[in-house]
Length: 506
Ligand SMILES: Cc1ncc(COP(=O)(O)O)c(C=O)c1O
Image 1 (tube, rainbow, N blue to C red):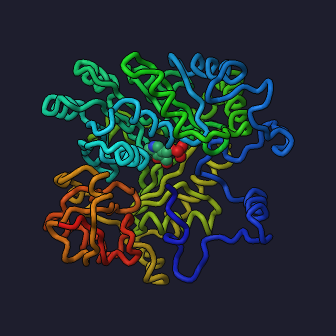
Image 2 (image 1 turned 90 degrees about the vertical axis):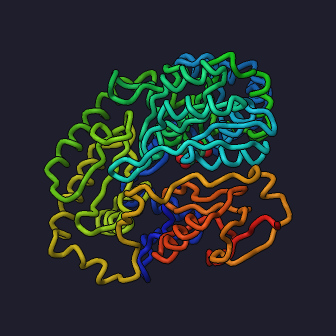
């Protein structure tokens, strides 16, 4: 999800150059030797844990090493140990990320052609599940916080939707969001259960929630009544990229059906390197987790405390924001828009001048992802950089960067704050039917009234303004054309110039 360097580079200047050698491996090695500090995934932060040379331990399902698709030995034990550690009834190791966990969870809960209630800001894998299973999506649209990120799901909205459409078969909430915003899962689960439907929680960004002292992080959906919970280990804990967990905590979902779909969406050759790194992550959580999370909490507190002295750079504080039920303070959302800097500009300054690699740049803020593996050095360097940026880009110099780079990333974007760009268009047919119907290509500007075969997303944050099967009405078209004209990055259309759109042939 990281804002691509290609998009975010200032004109004529590659963001960084690690091309010391010609191969990918050489570039990776050069990056790892550099002083660039990772405020991005994976959560291990490139901290070497004891691990044999990968070439010497990369095997497949041979005698004595069990089979992930039918675990009876060492992998079964590892899954059971994982369930105990995370407080789940049953846990499944995922080697294809939360992506495959969400595909399996949705597929197991909603019959082909059925209806799913989901938040509009969910990950694309959920949209893909809707497509693959020809589901009818019913969307919930969270309100924006004052800071300008999407807030929590309202339990009342879930109740209203389930009453209005009793044929909904499951509810999917993303909590925390990429920005760390958490919803009231306990109330939402109580509501879905009153209606007899399972709640799937995409907790991809919250695998660390079950750990640390009470109050350090929001409570995990696993403790709050969610039926299926999907967590990416690699995002916020020390495990290799692609590692994730799917927890089954209910009898509302058939275990055999869930397993059937996991068998479809997971690789038939699951990597033992990935699974070993998951085992190693569990060991570290058990042995060193309590101490490391205490240290992590202290580092975060010190960082936020010192940043209080910043006068123009603002850090998101979910505790004081409207429409934010709870929030994960390990996600540092930093805005320098008062200095006249867009998110992309701040991202580039931190990268080039301070060698601090952020996770993501949005229109008006950057996201620094932290984990229990972060070092004091990282927090200190980030705080120092922010104070220096305030000095360098104070009110009188705020325009200087844009002056030197007139075509640079767009300025902070106000319509996003006012919340008037996101709405749910009318659904004319399921996404699958629209995508597979005979289509034609028309000019976007002439497409009012058409049923789209494609997505249009403002990126970041990547939430669809329009999805396949939805009607592009005059108002929405006006918004989209305005966004396009203001130079913001629209994604999803197959036409790279965003001039044409594929629509269902009428
Ligand atoms: C909210 C959310 N859910 C799910 C995923 C998919 O996770 P993975 O990369 O582990 O497949 C992502 C990925 O960025 C995400 O942001």
